[in-house]
Image (cartoon, rainbow, N blue to C red; front, side):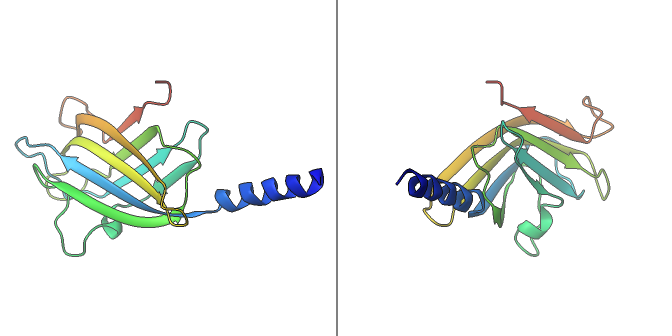
Amino acid sequence: MKILFALFLLALTASSAYAQCKFVILVTTGDKDDAGTDARISLSVSTANGKKLVIKSLKPWGQKGHNNFEKGHTDTFKGSGKCLPSKPCRMLLESNGKGNKPGWFVDKVTFTQIEQKNLSQKEKTFNVNRWLARDESSGTLFVVVDDCAK
């Protein structure tokens, strides 16, 4: 009986480790002069134990034909993949610094994971409130928001 129970727990753990999720990412560009960008934007979110979701470019996850990352707008990006095992607490947001007006002022990023099997959700808002630009006060094209220790 103990062996059957152990096998059941193992199967349950394995199935949830490979569960499929839908992801919804809301990116809010600040309402400052020249805040928008045409640069390629990538995103990585991770859990406290280091499990990651890496998106090399948000554009394919966005609405076709929509001009993303414009001043004062919130853009929605949707995709799917393997579920993260827990709520993300760390984010790396990065610009390639190219295109017309490559500097970008980001207010916040909200990440939502929806498990397809049971529709459970994990959501995290990462407050950024800074420039991703070489010619602004930050001087960098990336930001890491790490709330894992909180």
